[in-house]
Length: 90
Image (cartoon, rainbow, N blue to C red; front, side, top):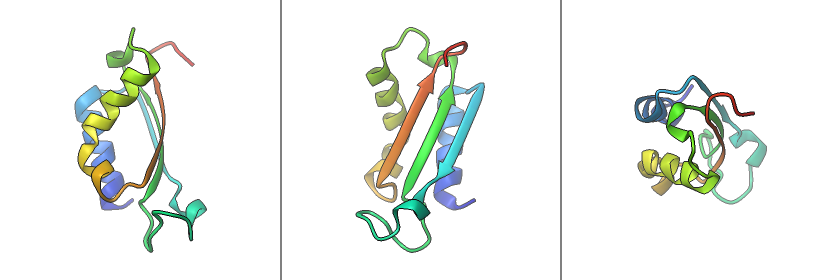
């Protein structure tokens, strides 16, 4: 994978110690759309499961993730689809 993918993986792992982390670069599906650029790594889909999300509402979970990825969201990442779960949730 690329440098942005690796940065997302590293930062989410460090911040949340997830029991499950799936990151998909969906940039190819958005070719020609806003924020798209050659080489991809602009549109990502993330599924993360971590104890850190237990008891937190959906919006709070998303804010936690956006804080952890603030550098990526300020520049190279145009879109981030999130599913943040606590262990045992589906």
